[in-house]
Image (cartoon, rainbow, N blue to C red; front, side, top):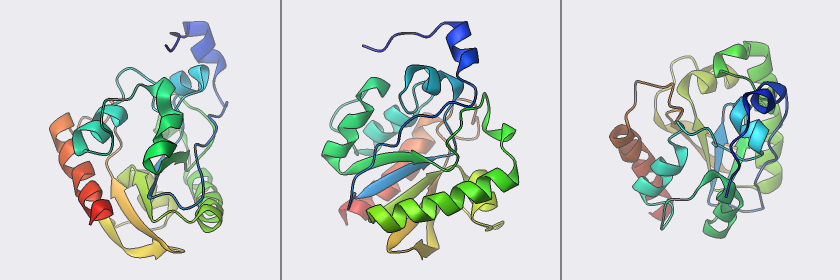
Length: 182
């Protein structure tokens, strides 16, 4: 069971990192924008209670049951991994500047070249547009790959992203699931 961090622990997490969950030849490497303070405080990806990542994965068929954030390492059993464009935790993704996103993208390229996932799923259209210099990119499969990985952009599952409700996330994450299983 995951412990609930205190407000002091959350504040102290500013700038901390959450370790990647990654291995060679994954089916999908899910790539967030950067960790939330909550995630950094507890040491697990997408741990903030309002985040819909785990519910989206389950609803789309990626996992057989709803995983809790403290079970994030279990994704490797399914052939999936987790990383971020930018490693440092912030309260909000909009606290990152363009230079930081571009630098993070360069580090992401190195990870993809080393680990060689089949798909790279970037979770956040605005961050993708900036980090990859693709200002007109849209949600879904991109017309380019990164090394041998097919790039797929999905909506950010943060509870702060009001543009997408859980049913919308289920649908677009499900499109990636169908392509992976294809």
